[in-house]
Image (tube, rainbow, N blue to C red; front, side, top):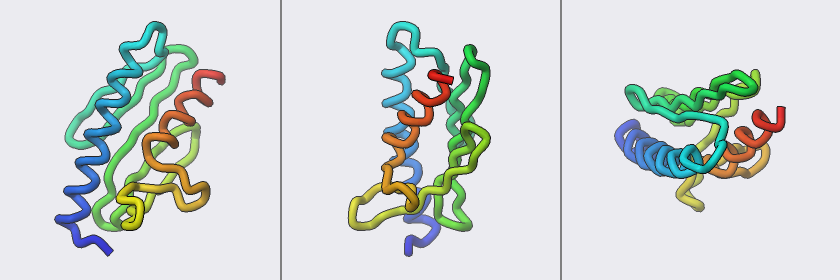
Length: 107
C-alpha cells in the first residue's frame, strides 16, 4: 500500500494528466462541459443538461473519488498497471471519466 507521500505524488500526476485530457476535450467543438481545478480538486461543469462532477483525491483511504451521476466512484491505486482503477469494472481513471461524461451528455 502507498504511504501518504507516495499517494499524493501518484494522485497529483493522475489528476494532472486527466486535467490535460479534459482541457483537450473541452476545446472540441460543442464539448458540452468546462473543467477547472481548485486546490487539487477537478470540477467538470455541464450546461445542458446541467450538472457537475467532482474528482478529488482522498489521502486517508488512498483513493480518488468521483462524484458523478448521483453516484460515488472510488478508485484504488493498482501497482501492476500504475493507474487508479475502479475495482468493480477495471476501468482506469481517464476511461471512466470519459464514459461518465458521455453518459451525462446523452442524458
